Structure formats: C-alpha cells, structure tokens
Amino acid sequence: MWLMSGLDSGQIRHAILTAQAKGYKQVRIRAGEDRFSAVLSAAPSLEVEDEADPEQSEAAPASAPDLTVPSPAVGYFRSLEPPIQPGDKVLEGDKVGEVVALGLANDVAAKEGGEVTEVCVSDGESVEYGQRILVLKR
Figure 1 (cartoon, rainbow, N blue to C red):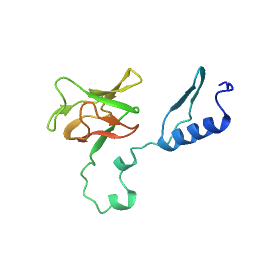
Figure 2 (cartoon, rainbow, N blue to C red; figure 1 turned 45 degrees about the vertical axis):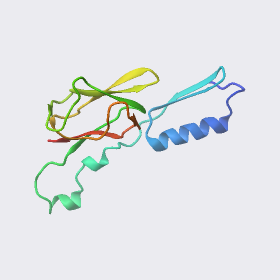
Figure 3 (cartoon, one colour; figure 1 turned 90 degrees about the vertical axis):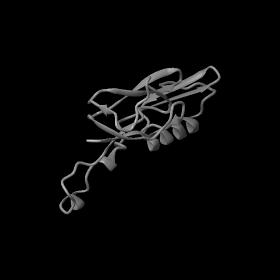
C-alpha cells in the first residue's frame, strides 16, 4: 500500500469503509497517475437469507429453502448462450453467466445444484456484489 500527493487519507478511508459496508473484497483508487489498492478482510456473507432461522425451523415444514446465486462482483451481467431460463436444471459448480467488471469476466457459478425458479437479472444489466442473479429450488 502506498500514497501519493493525488490521494489523501480521507478519500482512502471513505473508499475502504464504503467497500466494507457493501461487502467488497478489494478497493482500487486512481487519481491521475496515483493509484491505491487494498485487499479487505473477509466480510460477512450476504447469503444470510438462505439460512434457516433456528426459532422458525422447529415449526416450519422440513422443505429446504431456495438457494440464491449471487453476483461475485460489481459489473454488468452477461448471459450464457442460450440463456438460463426458469425450469432449467443446474449442477453444483455449473457456470450460469458472467459479471463483467473493468473488462474482466467473472464467472457466476451455482454453489449447489437445483432447478432455476427465477432469473433476477437480464443480459447487460448492472449488478452489485452479492446481488441475487438466480434463485434455485433444491
């Protein structure tokens, strides 16, 4: 980590705090020729909604909750050819699309297998880190 005259510590602090609040894994700042980058410590998972509430699980039926497939980065979603549709089945690790950030493609992969019940973003749509891309029924 290094600082130059074009970057002040207030800007860097603000960028880091904002990135941490949004769950980003790294920060890169450029001001003219000056650059700063940092890898942030692990942020809390944004997939909390997938975990069953212990108080509700006793009274709730034994059906498994739906699984969300989140965006791995901030960028623009790019569909596969042919695009994933509701009713399609995916296996654990299957690529379901890409998020293009700064010209680099980041694979969006299913962490578990299931049937696609909802496609939450369309091709070319901007997405945030952790934003729901797909919903799968286990």
